[in-house]
Picture 1: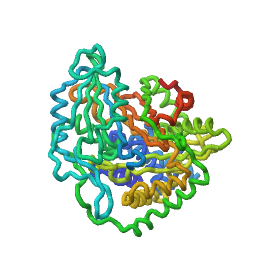
Picture 2 (picture 1 turned 90 degrees about the vertical axis):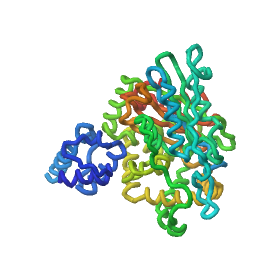
Picture 3 (picture 1 turned 120 degrees about the vertical axis):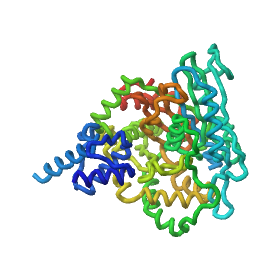
Picture 4 (picture 1 turned 90 degrees about the horizontal axis):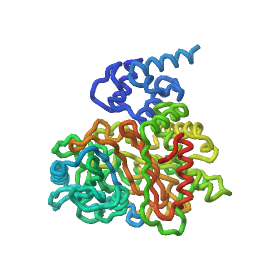
Length: 80
Length: 422
């Protein structure tokens, strides 16, 4: 899932040919408020989880690895 | 566009810098920029073939971007004396030096020495030439002092575009969406029958402490990252407060026009082109009653807009409209919408020139845009941020906002932002 998410961010949100690593700083790579909104929609569509505004922190969205962990946590909570 | 004054829709971009300006360096940049980009002196005219307005660069001899030097009273520096930075910005956005319908400059540089250790670079530009994303790219080009030409849109006749009937099919979902708007009777600050006057503005510069307060309130209300819906709701609620005071018997809905960055290509489009498409949504009085639910409602509407592929429909609608004389679509739109196009313009352009800390050897202390607005709607509220300092620009037309209404607007913004408006 982490790889799929990072590819989604790279191709659909940042639209860059530059490779993204799981630990790469997404804000430094150009992720802005509009990109965050598009990413939230893409996560809902692709992974079936809605992110609560309370979880929208720079800490949770700074890298692909952290976003993937948040999505996995939401998926686990939904399946309980 | 001529009839509504949009053809002279000018903006000022201001960089407040530390130190003294290096005039030779700035002049060299102005010369390179003008030499490399004939579009900066081109006129915009409709093609006789398809009636679409395009930049006509043929036959234009390259020339430097004009540079004018100014200084405040009592400050020893080259150039003409002017009372204040605000006066210079006022002259820029109300100026007649830029006329996109005639050959001549479409971008001007002004250098104003504010004190022995502070100066401002003010760029005057036409919104027909580029938008704020394009301006960011231009400033990044200037900051890099690269004298290579940036990509510009091709001049002359373009490749074949879809037929009007094809565009109509693509645009239809947006047309259907817009048909819902009139029943909500949206209003703006434009006074019907009044001839709009000069462009006015107020730049509110929030310091780092105030910006931290604003960001903390945003984080507690809408999360740390949803700048666009949060600040759009602050702006919408402020304009709604003025409308509600003017028409207390009506429940005022707000029709908000927001720029949406084109998906999948922000970095790949030529500098001098439109990077954004407008996203128009309606917020009802109930949705606007409190800031937090208003932000959620705006975000839900944004999601709905994207899921229904309305940006593509809006793009097709704009392609249809660009083939028509402005009166052709303005008149029906004004009748249909009872003289309104939207309640306000708004944008949050995010970080001001990300990646650039200095310009022509001087550290950038602050930077912001001051766009002029048309009437209707007669009001625009714009935000940007530089180095932990938020700047809010209120822009309006004389006759659209009284002094008392301006105070109400600022007071509502102060309540929502969580700190007084300077």
